[in-house]
Length: 333
Ligand SMILES: Nc1ncnc2c1ncn2[C@@H]1O[C@H](COP(=O)(O)OP(=O)(O)OP(=O)(O)O)[C@@H](O)[C@H]1O
Image (cartoon, rainbow, N blue to C red; front, side, top):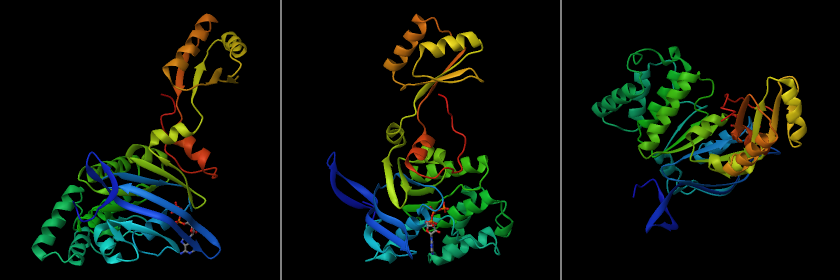
C-alpha cells in the first residue's frame, strides 16, 4: 500500500478501500464571519474530487486548511494517512499544492524554478536536472525553459506551477481553481494534464467555479454554500437532485404553435420564438408518452430537443448566488 493513503474500515472484495483525504466537522471563521461551518469529506485515493462554490464560498480556505497552510478552528482531518495537526510535516511531504498562491517566481527562468524545487526536495544535482528537464518537456515548456517565468502566458505559468509541484512526486495534489482565467485551449490542456495525473494514481482535490470543469473531471463533486456542503455526489447524482428536465418544441407555423399550446397544458410558451417547453424527464417512458400525445393530437413540431438538468441547474438550485462565471454547456441533448 502506498504510504500516502490510509485504509478505511470498509472492505470491498476483500481489499481495503483507501482514503486519501478525510475530514470531519472542519470549521473556520474570520472575526464574526463563519467561512467553513462543519465540513465533512471522504475522498478515495486515486479519484478526482471537485469542490464547487461561488466566489467567497470558502474553497481556498478549505484547501489552505487541508494543505496545512492555516489551521482550522475545529474539526479533524487526515491527509495521506496523516493527521493534519498531529503530523503536518508528513502531510506536507505527501501533497502538492498549486493555484491562487502559486509558487512560481517570475524573476527567474522556468528551468531555475524547477531546479529550486528539486533543491527543496533535496534531490542530488544530476537527478534534479534530469527530473526538471523531463517535467519541462512533459508540460511543453522546454522551448521557454531559459526565459523568465514573468514572460510566460497564464497557461504556461499554470503548467510550470504543476510541473514544480510534481518534482516531489506527491500522491495527492490540490489544484485551486487551476483554469480560472485560461483560454479554452489552455483549459483543455490543463484538463488533459489532470486526467493524466489521475491515470498515474494521483488523487486530485480540485476547486472550481466552472461547472463544466467539475462535470468533465470529477468523480465526486461537493457544492459549498454558506460554509456547508449543500450536496455531494457524482455529477449524475447531483443532476438528479434538481428538477429542470424538459422537452422543447419549436414551430415555424404560428397556427401549429397555438394549437400545441392549447393541447399541452403543462407547457410554457415563448410566443416570439414559437417554442414550447414541456416539463419532462428524459426517460424512454416519458418521451414515448409525450410523442404519442403529439401524434394523436396531430401536432407537428419543426424541432424537438430534450434537455436534461445540467450542473448549472444544480448550482443555481443549491447556492444562493445569482451569478457565477460559467462556460457554455450543451443545453440541449
Ligand atoms: N485571511 C483572511 N482574513 C479575513 N477574511 C478572509 C481571509 N481569508 C479569506 N477570508 C474570507 O473568507 C471567505 C472565503 O474566502 P475563500 O478565499 O476561501 O473563498 P473562495 O471560495 O476560494 O472564493 P474565490 O472563488 O473568490 O477564490 C471570503 O469572504 C474571504 O473574504
